[in-house]
Image (tube, rainbow, N blue to C red):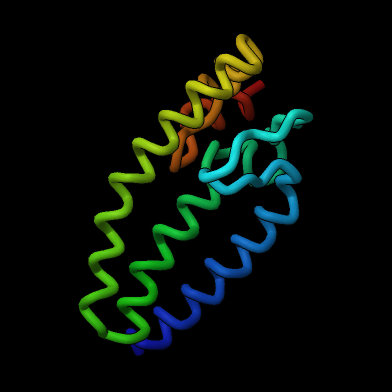
Length: 125
């Protein structure tokens, strides 16, 4: 049963990752400079969190462990610390490029998890 949870979870992570990459026309590997014409993605999955692909890939390491039972997959959790630092560097670059627009976006969204209090405030009349 646990294996099936892992398998289904991995497929969900891959599907969500594909959706995110299709939505974000700016996707650039971290080894390449940012594109000259950059459109800030703030809708669809980015409406809730700033790094949905990082979340999807991080959960994928957990689901891979559940699917296979191979303990080496757990070492993928170590990469989560690198993602935190990577996201901070990306945010600094985006603040320099977009200024107040991006700092306002940061206030509304969580880095890796949604800000529930913001969602609750926005839905209240």
